[in-house]
Length: 190
Image (cartoon, rainbow, N blue to C red; front, side, top):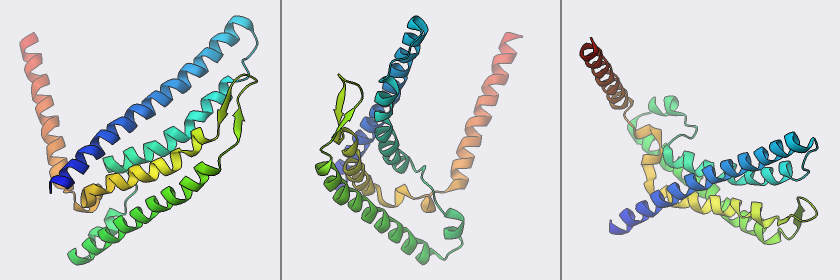
């Protein structure tokens, strides 16, 4: 169990790093676009490289954010259909779901690594800015590896085993508490 706990901690750290990477990529895209906008305002002509450079961040944002969604339980799920099944079939479908997810992640690693190794071309952003296609190609196997790492959470990744009633009660309890705090604040002000 110590190995599982350690691996889950590593998964949490990697998830946090993925969030930081995605936020950094979005901020990088915004900064590049803003520089292009300011340059256009100042000179009246556009920089040719801003759009091309900014879109190189899209594979990072798109693929890495998939792993964040998986870890947060925000992926697409067919919970209504699964909840209609008897308990043994729910568990079997959950195991099948995790197996398919693991297979998909392994395919991403296997084929993504080959894609990365064969990405030998250079992306010409401008005459002076040249970026290897490996910059974007590495996201495919990396996403697969992170996917596999997050699978250590097992059934916790799936919504089939979460108790919505408890979540709703907790959310309503927080809302009731917030309303009570607002009412008490209003009474203090009057």
